[in-house]
Amino acid sequence: MNEQADIVIIGGGIVGCSTAYQLAKMGGAGRIILLEKDFICSGSTGRCGAGIRQQWGTETNCALAIRSVEMFENLQEELDYPEDMEFKQGGYLMMAHTEHMLDQFRKNVALQRRLGVDVSLITPQEAREIVPMLNTDGMLGGTFCQRDGHLNPFKVTDAYARAAKRLGVEIRLRTEVTGLVREGDRITAVDTKTGRISAGKIINCSGAWAGELCRKAGVETPFYAEKHQILVTEPIEPCVKPMVISLYHGLYCQQSPHGSFIMGIGHPNEPRGFEMKADWRFASEMASKVTYLLPRLKDLHVVRQWAGLYDMTPDAQPVYGLVPPLTNFYVAAGFSGHGFMHGPITGVLMSEIISGRPTSVDVSMLDMGRFERGDLFIEPSVV
Image (cartoon, rainbow, N blue to C red; front, side, top):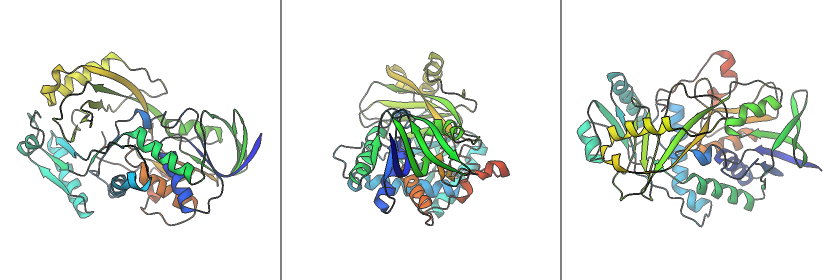
């Protein structure tokens, strides 16, 4: 079977589904087909911690997060989704344990306030007032933003997919891309296990598999996959409102609306590749670190643990736009653990880029060419 489409989107996570929705909503894009090799939200989106924050150290990331939070706040209504997205705006409390971190936090807060974020520098005592069980030994200060929060990634992505389908997007599940047909500087067709789809434009939203898909297009890119792990505890009565982050310990911990705690650790040298087996070493380290910061959690039982993949780049920042030298093959990937929180605005940006319109947020510095130029985009506040 040989079909014809105007746009083929590859990847059924939040980036692919929000892009499909925004393109269809904008109108004039023609026939849009989204291909997902498994089911909606089966990749990195469905394995993420699902936190959203506006507390970043660069103007671009702050702007992306501000827009996404605004969109998350109205998403249930906009997408006409019948289920509760479990949106909890309990805030993010970020801890500084070194003078260097505290100095960076001061710079971050000045930037964030200039951009309109309601964020505060807090003392250890103020941190304990927000989270009474918090161990602030060694903590020099921190920051807090009430509008940061957490959602259910499955429901958010499902909402985007359903809304896109209502606008005419065709979503093909369990349809793996087996190859890309290249003619000169263009990709003319996408091969799948069920047939070939000729396309005017192709958008690579395949997350951790973005580099593999670019390789199918004959282009080597710096994308790579990196394993990260998360665990979830049994539920208890609500006792911690914000997401607690310690950059010093590389840890984040959030109590969900259901009462369970979701937590993870970020290491600077996580294993690369596509292996996603959870291991006891992570659970042991997680238990040690989280019970140091939140001692009252020491008696909780772990009910689930899993591994997922970050779609990484050398500067841990995403790529938006064309993949040179190709002229119709686009990518939105490389979010390095922050794709869910930037998912809503990413759909808007990609629809604008594809249609040749000015972007709502300037992401020109996040192009593929920056790696060849050596012009990396460094974000100081990454977990």
